[in-house]
Length: 574
Image (tube, rainbow, N blue to C red; front, side):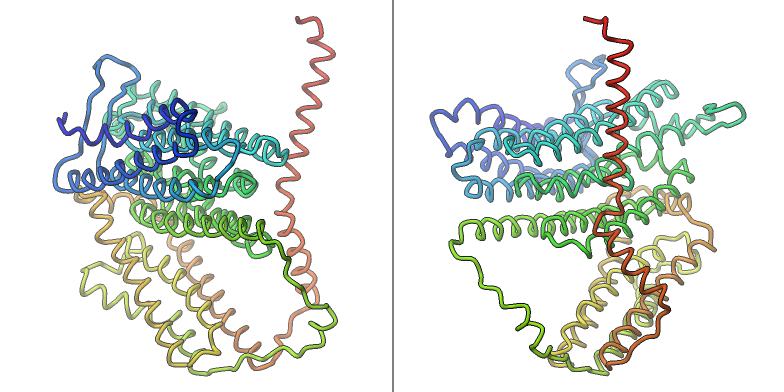
């Protein structure tokens, strides 16, 4: 129990703004946006104070007004909640400020700012929920508020269609989440987080799925709740809703990609002690995250629309986040989506600004004739052996050197594949390799500048991941041995882990060989069937692997079947 008022004020500020905006809108007009902005600024600065409080003091627990109240409208704010509240209020403040002029003279101006304040309140209470039931309530409330925000332009049919599709997929996840909550209450008799974790660790309950097929109770609960996380965080095969939401207002896209889709990562972190009891679930989470990453990144590369490209980029990044949770690196997932949320919000707001500028531009750019483009010789980028060798060496050799150097600084053991240091290095290696390969395209710049940028990028990324692995993990999970327990539980078999490392190394080597051959004007011999396969998969990726079409056909079949049943058997009903 605490007497500090600011945790409650952080939540009440956007809630009061959401209630006051429609009341004061007839008097203030578009000035009502200032109410929402002021409310978010207050919540943001109070969140800074709150983060300091929970860092130097124990977690803040505010009990419900009625201790016997089943809903338990209380608050539980630990370091994880405080970090999330700071992220939500910070991003929401920027989006409120941006939306003030972006939606100028929009017919739904008041409605938009009302919903924006309310969904911020729902996100804040979600991360501060004291028990699983209240988390579920606000989890579902966010689904409905997001739907209302997405269909802001309700006269545009593609917007309505995409919003309804989003609602249906999110409701599927919400229903599974509800099933997990009900099952958890049935097995453990409580929904309070500490009590659930204690009783789940002591329970030996099993559930019979089919005759002769049983599943541990904690695994069943974890899997059902994870389906809810899959829907919110756009994991395969429930990823199809996210790219279609680009029809909504750009500020909504920024809020969604910076905050809402990260809810799955927060949920897995909040229930980390529960998932730490189910290695099977963590392994499944890892493989689904890896599959989502590959599909999202592949489809992103063939998109010709800026916002949809950013949308599939988010799908891939959410796959990375879920992968990290599946490997037991829960704190790294939080670090990842904080960084992703900040830059992706900026990207979407920037995209909205560009789109808005093109709409009001009276003149269309003059495109050159195709014959002129084809006849002009393409300038050939100079080949720098120094840049190529630096990129090749830094992506394959220096990460190991830096890890051994960090071993002496951070005292991290390297002989255990289940240890977080190896996992952090793996993700740092992949991220730095992507960045360095992108820097290679700057080979027209001075060689020493590009080489310095490559080495600096590698050092920054690898040490940042080690920082996230050592300091941020200790910050979020300060109990001795807790983080190590998650890594050990989620450890993959050595053969599978080594396979991923070798496969990644071969892919990186292949990229550098391809870049070398292309720069020297050489051709890599490929069988004809591989060239045909490349074209076929390019077309399939452009069509999103026809997953959306498959869902559409299934929906039509179900609708047709329901209509037949209605006409044949239910026609007599009033």
